[in-house]
Amino acid sequence: MKNTKKPPRPDCEAMHLFATPRWRKLRKGAWKTDFGAGLPEVVILTISNEEFEEFRVCSDREKKSKLNKRRIMKRNLIDVVLQKPKRRKRGTCVLLLIYHTPESTGYIVPFPLG
Image (cartoon, rainbow, N blue to C red; front, top):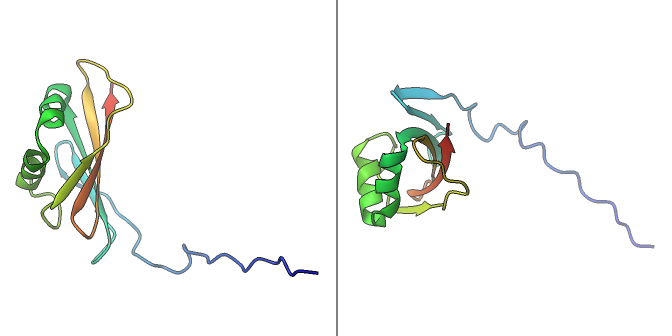
């Protein structure tokens, strides 16, 4: 009979692979948490719907430039990936969740508010 006993899963939380994340408010409508050297960071920005529409239609090069000019990430972005929003509302704000990898790719997830 075959032994089907699975090895135990590692307790990743107990391994302390990174420091406990702490959110910092950078300026009005901007927050950030950093997992440490060589690890990703997460940035949250709130922008107007009009700002988002301008951001959405610009080139990737312009998107990188606009985000890098804010000087909120530990390194400049080299690449960006913007997820298409699932729902659209007019006249509202947009929450941008930016996952910034150690390789300097920013994965941007927009979420309409209000």
